[in-house]
Amino acid sequence: MTDDVAGTGGEPGGGGYHFEVFPWNENFATGIALIDEQHRQLVHLINKLASRLSRGSDDLQLAEVFKELVAYADYHFKTEEQIWQPSFHGDAWYAEHKLAHDAFLPTALEIQNGLKDASYDRVLEEILKFLVNWLVFHILDNDRRMAKVVTALADGLDLPAAKARADKEMSGLMHTFVETVLGMYENLTSRSLELIREKNERLKTERALLASEMQKQSMDKLLQSMKKTIEAMASTVEIRAPYTAGHQRRVASLAEAIARELGLPEEKVQGIYLAASIHDIGDIQIPAEILTRPGKLNPIEREIVQAHPQAGYDILKEIDFPWPIAEMVYQHHERLDGSGYPRGLKGEQILTGAKVIAVADVVEAMSSHRPYRASLGLDAALAELEAHQGQAYDPAAVAACLRLFREKRFVFPD
Image 1 (spheres, one colour):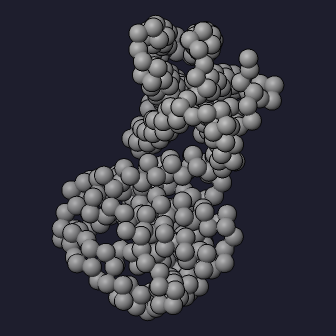
Image 2 (cartoon, helix red, strand yellow):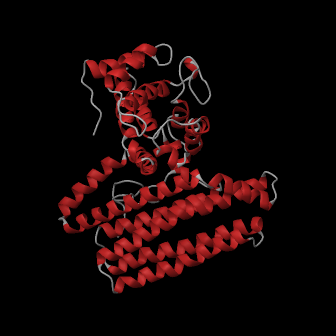
């Protein structure tokens, strides 16, 4: 019996899965080729196990795949440790990392033994959630941190300095990103489990139809993965500043409409929409009391707030998006005449997407309530655009925005 079913992902030899519970993303790469290749194999084995589970395989088949996964994980950990050990020389980081490896196998075997006593659905939840959570956090946080030390050592730093550099690169906002990606895959795993249960309850003909639908969806897998990552990141801002809940989503909706009104290619429209969806991600570095306090800001507080485009850029700049999302976030408060911030860019120095987001941002912000003022209204927002088009705001983007509201009756989503 094989897992060769046309679908997302792929197994060696040209086969595929019904679906991938854990889609691989190139942003997971550590930069060490051998480790990255072995991580891909671990991902493959998790998806192979999920594919077997999705078809209601018997206990023997499940045990075979799970045994293969556990054996490969043990081999991978030993390979990793041979790479880390010469660089860390028994350092506490190495010891802690090895403890994480040592804990994997006992936990995995405990779950395997639970097959005898637990319900089928419970086993699915325990196996897949444990594997996905453990592997995502291990790759994105632990292994990338260790790899950054190895890279720093190769650059000539001593071990304490290399660890300090790795900590700096992996702390703060980077940790927030790790948590949002982990949350995304937790949600994806839960949805996949529901799909598994549905597939096991349907007739074979219905299963075939569902597999076909999943095959179609897989064509857009990477884009959807990026969108879910961005949604998770955007939600972290709204949790800290509930009065602006929905602001980024509404700005993204208007920016997308403006971009289409301008006749931009669909691929560019998608990039603008995604950038607008997280244009204020840098707000997570602003103290909550500043974000939520009524009243005007003092000069120091204003300087802190105006640093959020830079903070957003720093979060996003290392992510390999197919669009200049980090730069659009960086530029969304720049103005044509150089009066914007944080860099005072002018005219053609500003990306088209950032110009579009700037217009959408102004309209949404002015027409919404804030703790320090009531809504100024849509008419006042549009008047602001008209008064400063060509000076602060891109005239084409302003004209497109005015048409949307005055002629095409655009409304923000609820």
